[in-house]
Amino acid sequence: MADQRRKPPNQPQTTSKRQWSLADFDVGKPLGKGKFGRVYLAREIKSKYIVALKVIFKEQIEKYGLQHQLRREMEIQTALRHPNVLRLHGWFHDDERIFLILEYAHGGELYRELRKLGHLSETQAATYIHSLTKALAYCHDKHVIHRDIKPENLLLDHEGRLKIADFGWSVQSRSKRHTMCGTLDYLAPEMVEKKAHDYSVDNWTLGILCYEFLYGVPPFEAESQKDTFKRILKVDLTFPSTPDVSAEAKDLISRLLVKDSSKRLSLQKIMEHPWIVKNAKPMGICPT
Ligand code: AMP
Image (cartoon, rainbow, N blue to C red; front, side, top):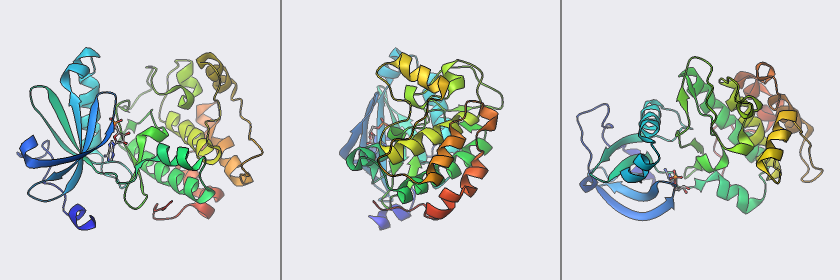
């Protein structure tokens, strides 16, 4: 498998004359089903390079008026090159479908791993938070705010390295945004209040994820949406007595889940935080 990965497929369509078509691929087993189509394991016939082929039905995209969002997702993801950001090698379409040629993440969803284990070890959690922080620092540098970081959008490669996927909600922005988006539990207070928000929404989400990795549930979970919103706005943060989580981890979470977005720990400070320094595997490789 490793040999097949070494050679990337030829340049993506956006940067070369290469026009991909379904005839260039041997399509294998389904890897999963998303809201707008399925993802298949596939091999580019000429290079033998293994990819994940995401098939999206145009009719569905048009039905929900998401053409612009999809194009934005494809453009953003194609331009990003980082070991912790899932590569989009290119895309093509036929009359009915759009095909995204994605890097194959052999380990699947981090969410599945989290559900299987209940919660993660401090080494695993710190390694993933460190990888995510590095990827977000890279994205923010390129003026990309992800806004929808959640375990379902995080994939693992064959070595257990984290990959941010699904840039459907991300925006390329130099100014504050007003649109409400993202998944409830992971929303920052300023997004709940539909106020202007900026890069620091992703820092808040890192706090939510760090908590969920260590405790198995997001911190502001409640019976109803309304109650989740209330808990987010109050920053109603409590740490259960089990599992036993170190004081340093709780310190990092408390410094990220701060209502005033300007007072949240910066991405640089997260990478320097004692809990990360002590627990994160430097290469981001964390077999489970
Ligand atoms: P999505 O449509 O992006 O939500 O993907 C549906 C499912 O397919 C996900 O839940 C993953 O389990 C799987 N999947 C998506 N992209 C990949 C990929 N690049 N590599 C491996 N599995 C993937």
